[in-house]
Every structure is written in C-alpha cells, then in structure tokens.
Image 1: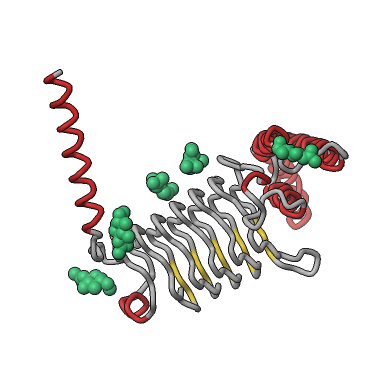
Image 2 (image 1 turned 180 degrees about the vertical axis):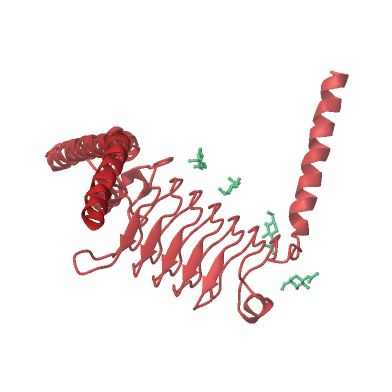
Length: 298
Ligand SMILES: *[C@@H]1O[C@H](CO)[C@@H](O)[C@H](O)[C@H]1NC(C)=O
Ligand SMILES: *[C@@H]1O[C@H](CO)[C@@H](O)[C@H](O)[C@H]1NC(C)=O
Ligand SMILES: *[C@@H]1O[C@H](CO)[C@@H](O)[C@H](O)[C@H]1NC(C)=O
Ligand SMILES: *[C@@H]1O[C@H](CO)[C@@H](O)[C@H](O)[C@H]1NC(C)=O
Ligand SMILES: *[C@@H]1O[C@H](CO)[C@@H](O)[C@H](O)[C@H]1NC(C)=O
C-alpha cells in the first residue's frame, strides 16, 4: 500500500514540477529563440546587402572597363589615327586617368598592359608619341609573371603616376622610367632593372627583393626605409637621394661604384656636398640684390 502511494505521488509531483518548469521555460526558450533568430536574420541581411553592393560595384567597373577598351581600340584602329597627334594622345591620357580611378587593381593592370602593347607608354618611342599618365591611379596594381601572363615591360614609361603598393614580380623592367612617381611601399621582386630611372620618385618603404638593380638612377629619390634583399644595387646613382633608415649597410655603400653627392646616408649623416652648386646659388643671390638695388636707384 505504502509503496503504491509513494510511487503514485512521486510521478504526479514530478509531473507538476515539470509542468511549472515547462510553463516557465517555454516563453524563455521562445524569447531566446526569437532574439537569436532576429540577430541571425539581421546579420544575414547585412551580409546580403554587402554582397549586393559589391556586385553592383563590380558590374559598374566591368562596364567602365569594357567601354574604355572599346572606345580606345576603335580610336587606335582608325586609319586617321596619328601617333604623333598630341590632341589624340592627350584624349587617350585623359580617358585613361579618369577610368583608372574607378577600376579594380586587376583592371588597372590590364589597362597599363593595353597601352604598353600599343606602344603608347614607352621610353624607346619619341616623347611626341607618348601618352602622359601624370597623376594616374595605379595603387595596388600587381604585375606578376605567370603561365597566363608574361611581364615583359622593358622601357615602360610611368612618369608621375600614383602607385602605392604597386608590385612587379619576375618582370623585365630594364630601362623603365618611374620619374616623379609616388610608389610608396612598392615591391620589385626578382625583376630585371637595368638602367631604371627613379628621378624624384617617392620610394618610401619600398622593397627590392632579388631584383637586378644595375646602373639605376635614384637621383633625388626618397628612399627612406627602403629594403634591399638578396642582390644589392650595383653602380647606382644616389645623387641628392635620401637613404635614411634604408637597408643599405656601410659595406653596400662603400663596396661598389655608386655615386653619392648630397646624399643622406641610412644613419642620417650626409655625403660630400657639391660646393659648386652652393657657389652658383651665392652668385644668384648677389645678382638678385644687385638687381633690386638697381631698381631702387632708377
Ligand atoms: C601626324 O601628326 C604630326 C603632328 O601633328 C604631323 O607632323 C604628321 O604629318 C602627321 N602624319 C600624318 C601621316 O598625317
Ligand atoms: C609630379 O607628380 C605630381 C603628382 O602627380 C604632379 O602634381 C606634378 O606635376 C609632377 N611633376 C612633374 C614635373 O611632372
Ligand atoms: C613620400 O611618401 C611618404 C609616405 O607616404 C610621405 O609621408 C612623404 O610626405 C612623401 N614625400 C614627398 C616629398 O612627397
Ligand atoms: C654614416 O654612414 C656613412 C656611410 O656608411 C659613414 O661614412 C659615416 O661615417 C657614418 N656616420 C656615423 C656618424 O656613423
Ligand atoms: C656640382 O653641381 C654643378 C652645378 O649644378 C654641376 O655642374 C657639377 O657637375 C656638379 N659636380 C659634380 C661632381 O657632380
């Protein structure tokens, strides 16, 4: 008897307790579920919106790129196109600088290869036949030799471009020109770089890794924090260059046939200063004061 009452009361007590628990838990569980679900939905829709936005940008870039290539190809293939016509070249330059601002880094690269292949940005062509890309945005563009892409850019002419973090890997850059270019953080990896001109280029934080830097002109270039891994430059011209904190050791500096004049060394001290220039400057000042005194007397 006792056994049965005990056994019958136990489940019923249990049942009522679990009912209480359940009735308390259910709203709680539902509430938590709702919150989790809403948060999840929210992040899904944010991700969707982000994806839509990206796709819209990519589509727009593709349309702009296609239109640019189509228009310029048509112009170049016209029988009336004249390589020495400055107006036509300036038009191409203007269109190129404009479109580059909007393109992806792969499309930027392809635009440059396109112009290079049409011989419009080459040092070995007369200046009158070059498209000027002053201020063109080549930020982050990567030129890397691969099975599907050669990287023969000998004589490429990229004066005054804005190309932070540009990368050249296993490229032929012999006799290339980067004068006055802003190529902060650029990487030159395993590339041929004989006779390249970096006159007045800003190469802050750039890396030269295993590139053949031979007879390169760093005249007036900013080489702050530049690293040279592997092969060191040979016969470089560092006239007026700023090598502060660059990776060139005392040995690299003294061992070779570089030119140093008005150069700031990695340790912050200066090389021999060209006195001729100072004397010329002094002469100019004298002439100015003479002219102004003449002005006063007349
Ligand atoms: C191309 O343009 C240049 C400069 O305007 C001109 O001297 C030359 O004669 C032109 N050539 C042709 C084939 O029209
Ligand atoms: C050098 O580059 C800057 C920036 O693109 C440009 O404003 C300036 O005119 C260039 N100077 C020369 C001499 O090309
Ligand atoms: C060169 O680039 C560095 C890094 O972006 C910048 O701080 C510096 O002002 C630039 N120098 C010149 C002369 O433009
Ligand atoms: C700085 O570096 C140059 C070139 O290596 C060297 O000739 C010069 O003695 C160094 N100056 C100091 C203060 O270490
Ligand atoms: C020093 O500067 C003057 C004037 O700019 C130049 O003619 C001369 O060649 C320079 N000297 C050297 C050794 O580079």
